Length: 216
Image (cartoon, helix red, strand yellow):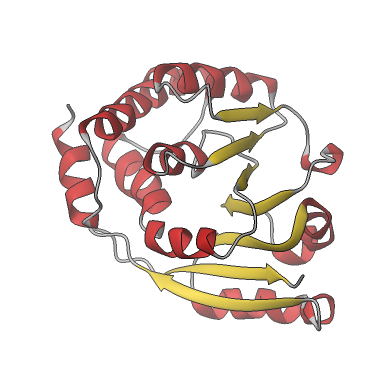
């Protein structure tokens, strides 16, 4: 098992078992094996662990709180690409059902390999389409390093069930507040917004989860 990955996970103080630890290690190995071919991520070994896997998992407690408020349990990772945050989160949330939405056939090929390697194929599915073509609706939409809210909010609205939550990984709080201000007219009377800070151990970076809840 990769010692840096183990140390990084310990720094988050998460509860996990040997099966989950092994799955995260296998996922890391898949990324590093396929990265030269698929150009999945511009980072070295330590960068993949801290700036990507840990970033995906650091707000896990916030996510678990949000899931408890949902009527259903359908989660979607939009523009999944290299599988983050959807695959690490699925490993740590064994009762969830995640859908990875990715339009690139090459990256979908990687995602299928990664799901097989981590034994997630049974409860994590893939939609190989651009999000503009997706007609299914979900209880939660997760997205990380995705387009600004002003560009995609109308589309996200159509993909989200009433009572559902948009779980957006964002950077500095000030920038998040500016994004929210840009869609304030679309939010009024239909959505609530909460911004929650989170930390990535080992990195000095301001990170924020923006929770946008669709009223029933």
